[in-house]
Every structure is written in C-alpha cells, then in structure tokens.
Length: 170
Image (cartoon, rainbow, N blue to C red; front, top):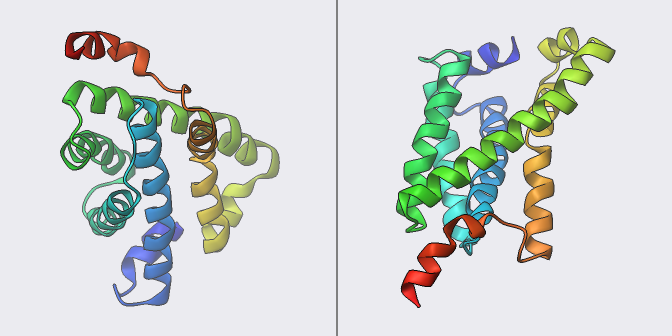
C-alpha cells in the first residue's frame, strides 16, 4: 500500500513531507470541527500548530501501530489535546471529538466506499500517491462542509447540550 511505502522513506524526503502536509490538513479540519461543534471560538494559530504536531507524531506512530489502532489513538488523544489547548471542559471536548468522528465516518461511508465500489479505485490508490491523498481528504469532506457552515451560521452547533452551564454561570 502507498502508506507503507511512504513510511519506508526518509523523514526528510519530499514524499514524506507531502504526506505529513496532507494529514495535517485532515487533522486541522478534524480539530476545527470538534471545537466548532461545541460552540466555542477557535484560535486559528493554535489549531494549525496542533494539527502539524499531531501529523508528525501520528505519521511516525504509523510505523509501530497498524491502521485502525492509530486512528483510535488519534481520536482518544484528540480529546485531551482539544480540552487542554482550548481550555474546554472534558465533557465538551468528548462531545466535539465524537461529533467530528461521526462526520468523518459518515463521509467515509457515503463518499469513499462508493468510490471503491463503483470505480475499483483501490488498485489505483496503491500506485498513485495523489489519488491516495484525495481519498483521505474525501473522508473529511463532511467535516469541512460542517466547518464552513458553522463559520457562516453561528447557531449551528451542539451548545444546547451545555445550556445548564450557561444558566449556572448567569
């Protein structure tokens, strides 16, 4: 698979850096949607720095953990990172990350699996890095759509789940 070939390359190769750049975009969109989902304001510089650090760490982690387990580790650690960096309560962080994960799974089922079924894209993805990155980016398409809509419409979030916190502060 392309991912295995990527991880066999040197850390300083262009292919490896291109892979890290692509995954950092994916992680940025995931972090952004997790924070937007709970109705909090996002600090763009923090989100970019977090996504780049996570991309480097988890790209290196893929050498030691197989594919489903590294994503499990990513989403579990993303709960703590979002809670710590954006100073959110743990409950809000868990709800935001679960929401981002559900959107990713929904887009994975509706977009990526249909591409695999109808176009036999799996064999081509093994040979083409650009196609592999395209498939990865389609898995966060719904997260990106949600982020764009949440930026446009301020009330498009799950803050109603935490309305008792606002009432307690008032």
